[in-house]
Length: 498
Image (cartoon, rainbow, N blue to C red):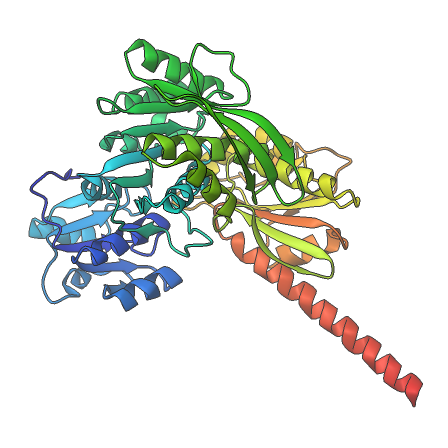
């Protein structure tokens, strides 16, 4: 791969996998900046159609001739390190033609040049925290540019080229690409071993966050969650190296100073009422309150990180807090999909045991706050063979937080199947007295869930793969059943009238 430099020509950019959540956002910014944008993807999608209406030239399917969709070859080709194989015909044609091939992270770094960079990193919570930060800063009138891995519910987009000084983005650690950036504010939400197919050891994974801290520019800040041991350890080491570090959370047993202290957290079925104390350098502490419309203590922590990041970037604290109250969530982050026959269906992107545990804990808090005896039904699709084999016991423990579970087979994504490995390695470790269905047939998943669910229950489809389509199918089948029931009752009534 060729890294970008000050001389990189972004006048004509071709993006391989342009419909992806991260790539499509960067394509959107390029179009608004006047670049000629071309690209390809394996299938049609809403993101592809939106980019076409903006003027991008996009082909479905990969082929060497796609490099000339706009009439001439691009000045640079962009790809995803993990998702696109190196033998992709467009990448091969670019190399043969001497066209620079760069990673998505290199392009993002180029687009952020000249901006005050606010980067959100961590094993879990990056998208939600980035989205909250954007919403808060928009409310404060800062109009930041942003690129996130999910679509903001209220804004309806995953990227924007703003007029403000700040550029807010996720910093992805999965392939160490976060080391490409130079943040003014660098947030670390948590650190837990992951992506060991790339890093090979937890120690190597931890080190990338130390290196990320060292990327903070002079006068900038490292922000860490004080409730996460590895994030705290990273922050303490960074402070010893002279980096300005601030923490956030409800508990602090470290030597690091609070930036935001969570003083009160009142959970309700709708979310939480939060009271915090913001302490900025050389500014008197200020108490603030706001309401969250997304459930779970992890979301309270994410909101505290967003408030602190926005304040350090120059936002008015009261206006930032108002922006957090206005935050309505991110697609596929405890996203409400609908209700039928008294069963509510939510969809979530969680794909690591800690994330699964967090979303099920949030769902449990929601139904407990309602006090009506509702149950939590999980429908989970493991993501990657390597992750499933590494964390099978942890996934089983997390899924046991539900009242019943349907577990689909593994979604391999970029990995090839591993002989003899299925999701049974998870279900075999789950409690024997818990209703659990291992379902290798994707088409049967919705029916399995419906067989377990009762009126009043909360159903969650969970995972980073195709599981999101099951949420819609569950609702469709429930609605059809509801309609049939009403039709049957109507027919009986007509017979009685006769």
